[in-house]
Every structure is written in structure tokens, then in C-alpha cells.
Image (cartoon, rainbow, N blue to C red; front, side, top):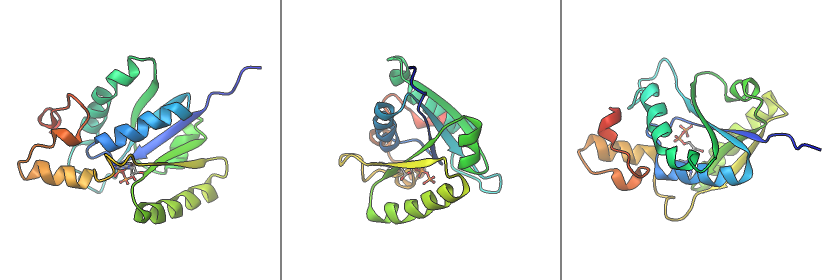
Length: 163
Ligand code: ADP
């Protein structure tokens, strides 16, 4: 009997996508047949990078993974993550956890999503210790203040090409 494809959505602001996000994505690919990295944006909030540039940065970052045959799609969306999951027939939502604060926030969101869409299960992936200090907020601060953020970003990514 053929097994059903296990598709997961990895949603986030990804403003910008960091080595921490890359690490979560790499782990998720061990669990799922296909992962959709979904850049969530809000029309009313002006981000650091334009959502199209975030998608481009992620697409460039994942090229080495995709070239090994990993099934990854990168999309942008606004609205509810559970609606995006339904649209793509994805039964899983992936979120990364760095701290207990992340867990507290994320578990509330996971419960709300479960209530709205009982068929959708959230899977938490713990941060690797070498990346657990990386956040998009810190990376943005480094970039805005003229620092070198390359050690926080996926290899080969020059942030200037996306700003
Ligand atoms: P959001 O605004 O939706 O929280 P982020 O882009 O900040 O979006 O994060 C997306 C997901 O990646 C979240 O689940 C977040 O906890 C996780 N994440 C962010 N940085 C790291 C990291 N360094 N290690 C593991 N998970 C991370």
C-alpha cells in the first residue's frame, strides 16, 4: 500500500531567514516528505525586508538542500496558517523552540490552531544549542547598525542583495 505524503508547513516572518530557521528546516525534512516554508506577512505592518525578498533569500538559502532532492517549496501568505495548510493539504505545522518563553507562546498558538483546524497538528522542533541564540530581531539589529551578520545567515547569503 502506498503511504500518504506527509506535508508540513513551516510558517514564520523570516525577516530575515537565519541559520536557526535553516536548522529547524533541516530537521523537519527528516520527518516529512515535503516542507512548505511560508513567509507570513501583514499588509498593515511594514517589515524589514519586503516579503518577495524574504522568499528570494529563502529560495537561495535552500538551494543546497533542494539539490540533494529535498522537497521544499517557498511561498508567502497573509491570513491564517491553518487556511494555508488546508490549501496545500498539509496536516502539520512546524515551529522551532529556543526557550521556555517560546514554548509558552507557541503552545497557545498551537492550541488555537488545533481548535480552528482539528486535523492540523503542530510539531515543535528544539533549537540546536549552537543556533539557539539567533533570532531575526538580533540579526536585523546587527544589519541596521552596520555590523556583519553573515555568521547568522545561511551560507552564501549577502543581505545587501535582498534589501
Ligand atoms: P514568527 O514571527 O512567526 O515567530 P520567526 O521568523 O521569528 O517568525 O520564527 C519562525 C519560527 O522559527 C518560530 O517557530 C521560531 O520560534 C523559530 N525560530 C526562530 N529562530 C530560531 C532558532 N534560532 N532556532 C530554532 N527555532 C527558531
